Image (cartoon, rainbow, N blue to C red; front, side):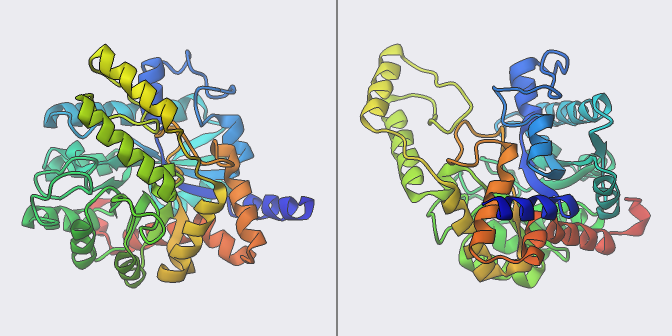
Length: 389
């Protein structure tokens, strides 16, 4: 065990983790009203999955910080809230300059990691954040947003979400124009959260590699948020990367089934959608809330495991190829995580599991950061140099 731990420690010193999705900015909004003094992440924060000591322990060298806002926010409100999220990340980086530095390009990420700091990039989680405006899209890129997820849990007027009723049949003509503009300005197209038809349309439209910032494999867990095998095959041809997530209901079929059953019970009782995995508090009639509590007591929550996450990494490798996988934990975006992957300090345990399954250092280095750095660099090469990334 010590030999494997030493091997992973040495690997991470040269090839740190570049994670695809962390919701710390939204957690700082909901838990501290963006007061970085009240919630000082230089100190251990037991109510969070993320703080600086655990980022260091986990070997994190680069992070896409999600500048998420709820997808049911009205258009202009969503834009404002996204700007506030961007402001939070920029203030966080400024508060801890010995730990973080803002990055927009692959070269900047490599330089920052090489200097021992954590490269901080921005990912807008949902096309609702631009309110269907190409001008807003361009300004988000100018502010450092390096990827945009085409939808979140609701459709946009131009793209179908995995968790909403189909409306556009994938991407509309406007949606295709938005993807092409993202290519032009060097913003990665993220197809987590979108419907399979939207995934396939994005693959057919984009001239740059795509990413899944935080999704797993539908062949192993039949959840709408996961990637079907034909899309993973297309991602290989596209040159993109699936950043495997740790969210229990996307990893474990037992967890997915329990999640679906609990949502159905909420609907039956007339309660707002909520499960044990959600960060939102349930709301509704007190008698109904008491009944859902009884249901939970009678239906214990199953646990996902680190080994199951490793299974998804290996399946993505088998279908898409070892050069097309990364890690997107979704820390601070869910209430429950798999056993063994409880916080950002846990990446070495997952890498150790894969090493025990025969992964070479070269393969692990691609998984931690090499593959997504290649994708980021390729997007820059394709972009219009006149935009000034």
